[in-house]
Amino acid sequence: MIKLHGILLSNYYSLAKACFFEKGMAFEEVKDPPSQQDDYLARSPMGKVPCIDVDGTFLSEAFAIADYLDHIQPEPPLLPGDPLARAKNIELIRHLELNVELVARRCLPEAFFGQSVSDEIKASTSKDLSKGMRAVENLLVCNPYAAGETFTLADLYAFYTFGLASMIVKKIFDEDLLGELPELKLLLETLATRDSIREVEAAKSR
Ligand SMILES: N[C@@H](CCC(=O)N[C@@H](CS)C(=O)NCC(=O)O)C(=O)O
Image 1: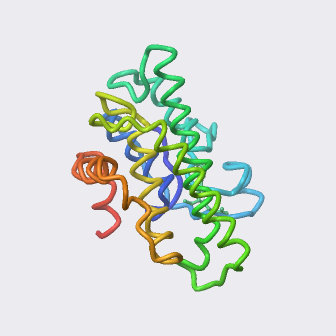
Image 2: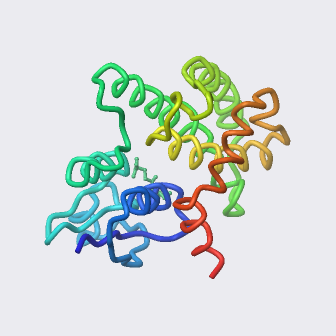
């Protein structure tokens, strides 16, 4: 059975875990916090969570994990079969991760870990986040799902990107990242009631 390594509180771990639930695939969870120790780096080369263990072969990066699961268990699909629709979905996912989540994450140490982040970093976060949000707004369909009429991996990325990014923005800038995006707010509320996500989130408070 595939083993999912990581920690419950991680949004990327949560995303990968939700993929297993979406697929109805059995998996085993292994509590394995991020680390820069050599043995950990052998499993996940940046020392990050999540990674999976497939009969002794380790695979890191939530997207690679989701893509692997989509290949070994094609139904229900996480990504569209049509090549262009698939590529557009991945385009949205990349912008969510690179230009919203990773940008907001620069202020994570101050938002959640009692450390302080410099004014320069805050200024660059604010500037780059505006650009990232503009890009994502351009690509989001929200009709009703992130990339169109059906649920896809982009919905999981939207849920776990904005879950973290909007909390950071509220704490650091006292702003509502989703303020002018009612359709996205509605999508995130709908996704919060989805079985896979509910199951992932419920485990955090057990
Ligand atoms: N691109 C990675 C991001 C994973 C990531 O950033 N994980 C965080 C927890 S949410 C982590 O392990 N952080 C520890 C660190 O950066 O050293 C993925 O998709 O899996």
